[in-house]
Structures are given as C-alpha cells and as structure tokens.
Image (cartoon, rainbow, N blue to C red; front, side, top):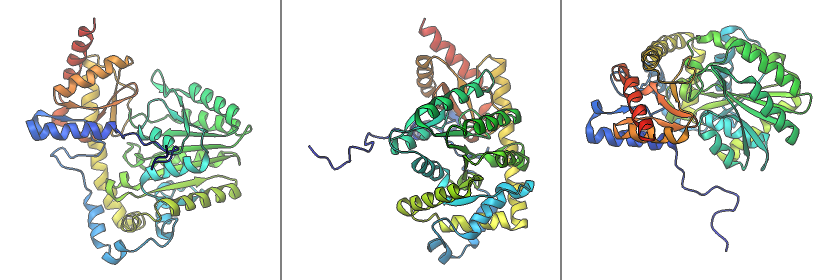
Length: 418
C-alpha cells in the first residue's frame, strides 16, 4: 500500500531530548515556582537575575535596520556581500590570518552542518561523529540517509586521537572518502577545548589520510565566541593553510549563538581548500542546496551581524558586553567543578563553554539518575555517556550545593540497584 510519506524519509515522532527536558523544567517552574527548580536543560544563555540573555548592542543595532531591509530578500543566495565579508573578517582578521575561502550563508550553524552532509555524501555513505556529541548530528545524518561511525571523544582526560584515526581509516578503506566532524572549542556537551598539540596531530593525520582519498573536515565552531581565549583562539585556523589539495575544511559558524539571537537563524559555511576547482564545485553545490531548501537567510539578521563585525565602535561595544558573560560562565563552571570534586562526582574534562557533563558509564544508572533528579525538580539532558548540565542557564546561587544534591541522588540510585 502506498503512503503519503516517501519510503526514504524518517517519519517517526521526533523526541528531542533537549526540548523534552526543557519543557519538563518549564512545567515544574509553573507548578512549584522558580526557586524550587534547577533548569539545567536549556541550551541558551540565561542571566543570573533570570531571563534570556539579549545583548544590548545586538538588539539596538537590529532596531536601526530599516523595516524594508528586514522585509526584503537577501542580495544573493550565498548571502549578501557585506555578510560574507563580515564572516571572513570576524573569523580571521583579528589575528591577521590571510586565508582564501568561500562563504555561503546558512540558517544557523545547523544549516551549515546539514548542507555539508548533503553535498559531501550520498545515501548509504558514512559520516564520522564523536561518540559524545550534539544529538542533532544524528538527526541530520538520518535526514540524508547517511550512516554514522563514532570515534571515542576521550582517552582519559585528553582528545582520543587514536580513536579518531582508527575510525577515519576504517571509513576511508570502505568508502574512499571521509567526512569527519570535530566540535571545538567549548565542545557540546562536555565543554572540552582541544590542545594545540592535539590539533597539530589531527591536521598531520588528515594530510596523510588524504593520500588515500578526499577528506572533508567539518569544524563546528558554534561556541567560538565564548572561549576564554578570546580572539587568540583564531590563530588555530592558520593550520588549515598547511592542508593538502585533497582536503576541504568546512567551518560551521553560528551567528545565532555568537549574538545569542537564536531565533534569527543565521550562520555560514566557510570553505577552505587549496584545490580551488573542487572548492568552487562544493560552493556551487551548497548554493543549490540553499536555493532548493531555504532560499535565502534572514536578511535583517545578516545586516545586524555585518554592522557589528564591520563597524569598529559597535564591535568593541559588543565584545565588551559579551566578555562579561564569558567570565560569568567561567565563574559558574568553577563553582560546580570545585563542589563536584569535593563530593567525588565524576564529570568529563571541562575547559570552557555552556555545558558540563556528568560522566556515567552505566546507561541504566544514568537513566535512573535522570528520572530521580527530575522528581527533585532538577532537569538535565540525557546524552550518550552521561547527563548534560547547561550551566549557561543556571544562576550562580542555584549552583551552590547542586553537586552534593546530585551525588546524594546518585548514591541513592546505586544503592537501590544493589
């Protein structure tokens, strides 16, 4: 019997663990009051005094965008010229990095991820992800009928380069081509940022692997503007100038997260390769994807980012405002990390960013703990290998004593299973 839905699509009810947990926290807050609830589910930044963080510099710049500019289509499918200039300037100019690239505007960083999978792989091919990673990576793979091979993210408290290499070699041997995701800096969900030597070894390996076939390295930099290193992190991109002609780097950049303007849905694919012919072909493919799926990106959002990136005075004001909240994230993290260590509550290596993840290897214990915490109005996101705590959404006063409450609940769960 024929159905309305194609046999090639995934038509199951979507259960997004982030939205599910967040909705539970919202319901509990309405029933019991804000003081009784710890909402560590939202992946968006909330101020200590409550309420979603909205940067004054961003929204006053948005107010100045003429209505007709907000209403009209963008100047081009690939994004307006000033937006593409702004993205390049934002990522590379502060550290005087001279790098040749092509840029295609996308609806948020997610658009960049999806377009890359669609245009790099075909149905039945395999994309490579970290085993502990952002859940929608898998959703994107399913949308394009692509399989997933996972590399282990950690070897102790370090990036597991051996697992990354083994996974890439295996896929290259079977497929003759590799697309591998690396989420850095401020990895979601662990908050890990790779060391220089880890990146050096990864780039050297990618060059070696490219002798066997094309390698597409996708670096998801969604949280690049919340690294404690500030603009200095961008020096990392110099490494990409040393890649061979058989390597394409795709930087997935989220303007939405940089501006904490999640609903604007603005991002970019930044394509870097010495092979200009193949890079141009990929850019053209990405442009066709844009035209066929979302047409053009939010024009008002692109204009606001261009204003912030290309006007020195506005950019300086934005950076000063944003850096206050980067420091606040660090303060929140330090509270939780110190208290977790004091009560012997295991977490994955955390450096910086929006999230800390409890390390719970036993899936049954993890699931039971997740449910037990919800009964105490403590809401986290259930991820592979643990529970993600969104310190971006928890004020400092609620972090004090939280690690102890979690550890006590974990002990109760483990005791009940004896």
